[in-house]
Amino acid sequence: MPSIVIKAPPDKVFEAMSDLTRHASWAKHDIVITGDQEGSPAVGNTYSSSKAGGKPYRLTITSLTPNKSIDFHVVMPSWTGRCLSRQTAT
Image (cartoon, rainbow, N blue to C red; front, side, top):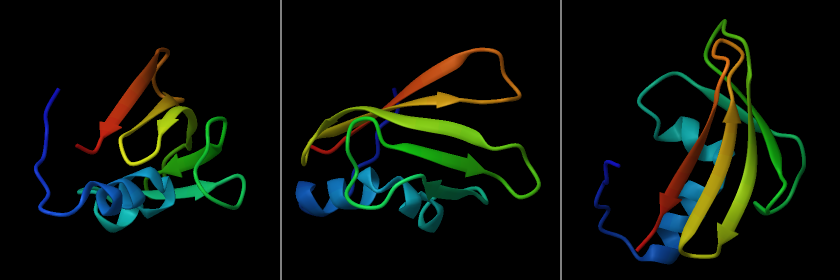
């Protein structure tokens, strides 16, 4: 799995990467992510994600360890499978 080194404290990196609605501010592609609930990210929270003019993806946080890692499950309408993404701050 590819990795990226960011020169910042893990808690600040985790704060940015665990708020899925903020991904659009640093993603390389044009994307919008909206939460189905308010408040801090938590296991079970769900989100909608889409590119301009595209069908929405569904994301669900499946695991979260504060200041360390977040896993989320993604369901894409244009693909019959499912994928799991892990982001880790170390």
